[in-house]
Amino acid sequence: MIAPLRSAVLHWTGVLPVAAVVLLALTWGRSLPVALVVLVSVFLAGAVLAAVHHAEVIAHRVGEPFGSLVLAVAVTVIEVALIVTLMVDGGDKSAALARDTVFAAVMITTNGIVGLSLLIGSLKHKVAVFNAEGTGAALATVATVAGLSLVLPTFTTSTPGPRFSPPQLVFAALAALALYGLFVATQTVRHRDYFLPVTTAGEVIDSEDHAEPPTARGALVSLGLLALALIAVVGLAKAVSPAIESAVAAAGLPSSVVGIVIALLVLLPETIAAVRAARRDRVQTSLNLGLGSAMASIGLTIPAVALASIWLKGPLILGLGASHMVLLALTVVVGDLTVVPGRATPLQACVHLALLAAYIVLAVSP
Image 1 (cartoon, rainbow, N blue to C red):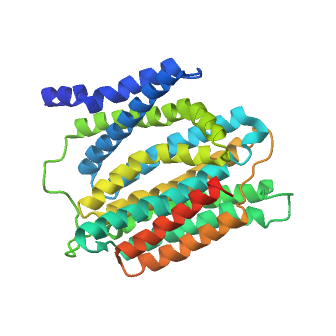
Image 2 (cartoon, one colour):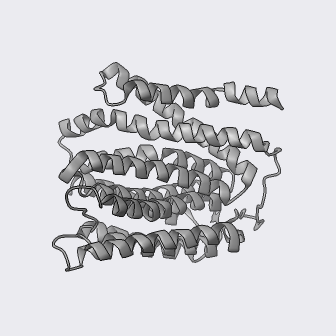
């Protein structure tokens, strides 16, 4: 048992997360020349692939939907820490950072990950099949928390601008946290069967039988390496962000584009894992990853920034603008129509991807 475990740790998926964290420590807070930016980008891509590998090892050990939950929560916790850190350092100019990051994550997950997974699943297996009850519950929770946290602040009148008053912010934070907790309990305990993968033949997959699951010790090692890989992904993404900001400014693009690029980098492990699951006719696993990540992003970020606002200076802007509210409303409506049948064709997938494309176009050209 020790020899296979040592072999797994010495595999590139075990060595690379450690090397990436070391590189992160050596480059943290420094201005990077072009050569180092390229090197950091290579290690960033490697950390993403390693994170996906270890997430799949854990998922194989604990089964669905726990495996999807591990990756979604791990990415979101580190993402929240990054957001709060940037807000502390940014002052007034970061007042809308939490809103922009959360909304970017919502659009990328509910339209990008979901649309790409449905497209791959439906192209390979003619139709993408999933459990409408579980997916519908996840989408309803995402829509409710997004509406309470990102839409309502635009219309409240207690404070000027798209902001919550302190009591309103406390309510939004507690509501987001409570709904996220209920969602996790529903997904993993009370109605776990609603979130299990369903094949196109109608078979519910409660466990994978193509290979022996890893040992508990091996899964714990993968959990530790997953945490290191995700820290490296977020940290190295932040390290290359000045280069991204310079490129965006040189191209004459709005600063909001930087947030989209960083969000894409941070969500890349979940995207790759979702695509792999869809190729194996596990579209429900892909949707668990996409919608679960959206729910975790809102449900954990809003309470975190609400707590951080106690010592943060400057306003906390959460309300969306008109164009973003339209895109959110379209996403919810289209998502409902996609979920209800429990089956999707490439048409539904492309509608979701079109909404993501519209979001990116409006970010580039408001």
